[in-house]
Image (cartoon, rainbow, N blue to C red; front, side, top):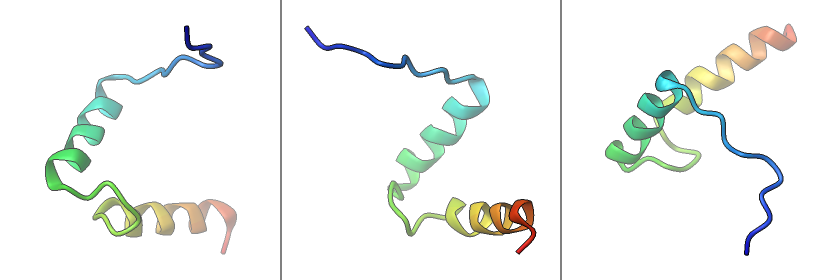
Length: 47
């Protein structure tokens, strides 16, 4: 029996974005969401 340390907590928005990744076949570091994530994360860090 698996021991779950943390159950996933995905809302509708997260599910929609996850399916977009899977449907586009980009479940990697080369997908279309990566540049947006990098830009937002850099802004958050003040870089």
